[in-house]
Length: 266
Image (cartoon, rainbow, N blue to C red; front, side, top):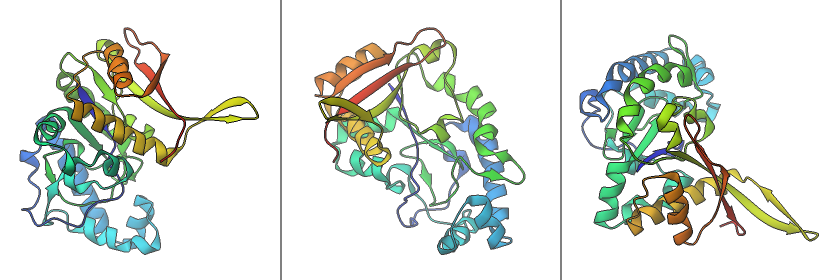
């Protein structure tokens, strides 16, 4: 099973590890593209801070993020698993997993990133601010920029098993599984079901969606579940107590779409 995650805007404080070494990161086929984005981001943030804030879509109160980006080459690093601290990662709570579950996570999870393309949880990277929705002056929209490199590298990384795609739409833009890989890919949508005047109504709640995806993945890792197909994933999630419906059954060139239906938000 290969699990695709978005990053988080929330990140831990800068680490004390040695500066990032692009050659040491997983998926070495992405190294040239990573170097180009890093160069462009550092150059942008070393110049006019107001222009950098505008490009990165940051507020006046986030000026420190520009300064941090300017020093990325010499900044301390953390593992990606320790760096990301947003809602999904809080629910996943990697630090509290047992040793076997941590090993499963290290083998199976890829975190997508506007700066790094995609990294594994044990890759050491500095704290940064650069979402996939950014358009860098010299490279263009990052979602489009990353597509050729991702299309070259990721199909081989998927192996022959399940691809569980938990990314948000901005990060899904960087790579869309195609062909036979699509047929063994499953996306997940979380729906909140409420009964109003005797009628069930369902809605998507962004914050809760992220938390639920983190808990779903934690459950799979803790249980040692290793579904090899989207159909097997449905059964594995149901075994963990989740209400799962198949919204779209996949096939050649078409991913499966699963709905996880919940009645309580927490």
